Image 1 (cartoon, rainbow, N blue to C red):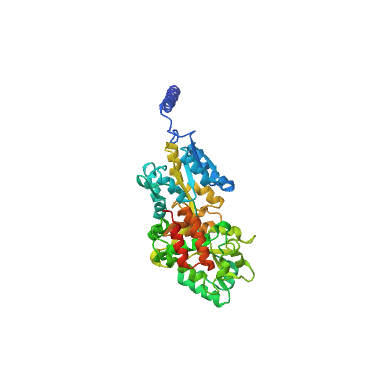
Image 2 (image 1 turned 60 degrees about the horizontal axis):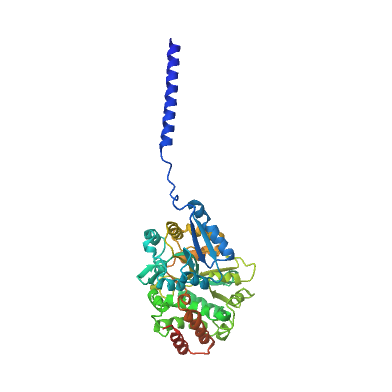
Length: 440
């Protein structure tokens, strides 16, 4: 009897388990599958054009691969060494790519002014965008369209220029200390002079582009001796070169460059010394000069087999006036949107995050302007320290000559500053010539 009851109970339990299992299977089959957040964009294509070629193009493609795999969006990037000419033809001809990467914001501003560029305020989650950049990046991406100011682009890869390089082994052996204030930099210059050497290595010769390193120095001093708003007015042509503010900035450069013994070779050698050769004298034994201000690309011109952090290093060019904080002169790439589709919006939103350049940062050769990027991503000392300089900036401004009309920024500004440095023209003559060259 007990055995029979036990058997019945076992059978009832078995039937219950089968019924429950079937019920759950039916419910599972009846339940809708988890929604794919990218279902509507999978298989779509977003076209993109820019200046990245060769190794840069490869690094860019690798950096966006994870996003493409996650979303199913195919970002088809086409780079060109004649980008500035080819993109104008495409846009003016009514056949632009979906997204364009501009290495010069001034060129983008030309197309914004003509009404070709989509206002990102209207198509992106701008709360997320604004929370991931310091205000200066947003200011530089705001441009005038026929309908008023618009958010014209998203900043991607950037570079820092406000850097002073030095021969670390010799510098440390001499007992010199890295200056953190302008007063300390002035004291270091005096110490090097007292030791019988020239503090600075400077050269502005660059073929048809001779003079551009001088324009960088003037831009640095504009950011350190007047307000960012005056810098913007100057770049826009509203503040003349022949103004007290610009004269003050140029004087700050001249006080360093033209003083006896301050630059290796003296004032007259500056205009004939190649910008790439100038820093090499720091690595002679003993060094013939000790400091060189230039962007992070300059390491490609250093003697071979030098190691960052051991043979050479750099520091931030200190602020002159604390009232203007810690400004940093930058260059970089700004991505603009020319066609509005869901997949294009998604790609542009992605470009506003550090994830969009993380792969490139890890591979080397890119600096992220995004707040959500991590210093641990940087695989080499130079990139990581440049990123720190940019992250610690209270304001950033783009290379001024790249923003000015070509006749000025890549013309009279270079030419007249070279004439002034060489002594062929007075400052008065040079400034009046630059102002006269500004397009009416």
